[in-house]
Length: 153
Image 1 (cartoon, one colour):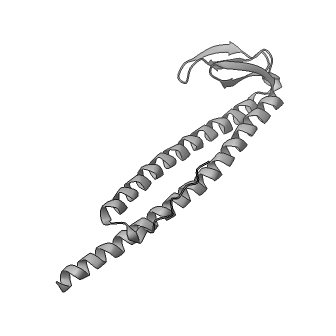
Image 2 (cartoon, helix red, strand yellow; image 1 turned 90 degrees about the vertical axis):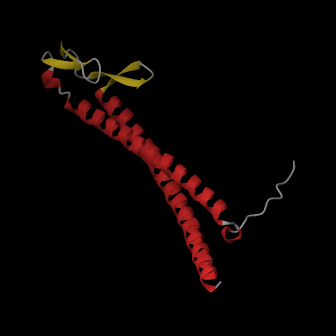
């Protein structure tokens, strides 16, 4: 195996154009990571809503008419025949029949898994933000040096 002979480069050794490129790259990465964070938060909220929906199904409502969602905006009337059994969307159009307790655990596991990913992503975002701040600080120092050199000349 060949070993990498690359050594880290100090930010102060780079010129303003290179620092600008690095800053732009960090901004793009931060934008992407922040969007991913928001999407994960939305997914987590949907799973939490599923937990609430499963909790709303009560055995006392057996035989009562309910609205069954076919899509996000289309509901049809139906009768609740077995309140202890629910269909759980496990992804890509597949549904599995579970008890209310199993469904709640399934959704709670999803919420926990997403929270772990959110925590990791939040740490990554913070590190990228710190790196970008370091680049911005070096850019400011270099601009001040340029201004001083222009003023002296």
